[in-house]
Length: 285
Ligand code: KIV
Image 1: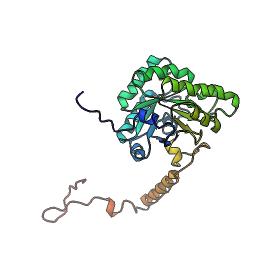
Image 2: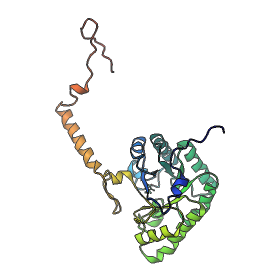
Image 3: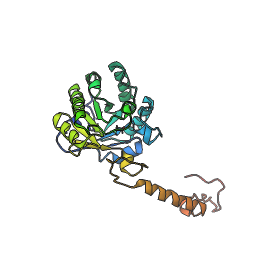
Image 4: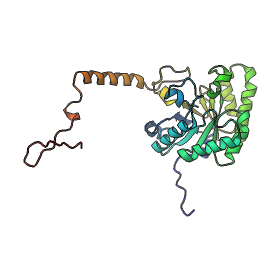
């Protein structure tokens, strides 16, 4: 190759190098427009399979198809230029075997242009993580509350609130780090344990409902913007866009009904003809 690489985005190794340093900032993104808005402020954006619940009205993330993740992933890559884009592997696309995981993850990388994938699971996914990372696919792991396992967990349950659960959760964290993941999301985990795991492993931990001591934090964008009807305890609403949308749409409806909108400034006038009479064929410019 004669051309130098022109990678200008954050990369998975750059995220990995932030272990113990400045906290890593991340949010979910599902479409090009919001990706562009958050791009200057985040280190990575996650095209989370939570989009199935947030945007598509599913009760869980289980039904989300791979093609939907690819469609949203490609839009987020097109809308951003700076942050690393990580795309979630949906339920059923990677658990069966490492080669199947590779085939689907390679599709995600090739068809979206993203820089990494994320998958859920600890000890039992370690082999797959090594298989992918040694074949050119950067992997972010996800342990603790893993929403794709909602049916075996019997609900979205916080993990590690009893000490007897700690051993297996710590084993999960160590396994994904040793298998080659460049970072790990820790979701819905007792604060003390999340902080302990952060000290214990060599890769960055990204907390969501975990601990301020994690190496970074992530939230679902719609939750922190105040667009979600109900949010879990760990979400802080940094904005109130739901209210702003209601106010704007109410004002629009009122003005449409009163014929106040569209006013003169929002309509197109007829072109003036040469002899200064009005033309009958107005342009739409
Ligand atoms: O799908 C998602 O949005 C996630 C985050 C909650 C980490 O996995």
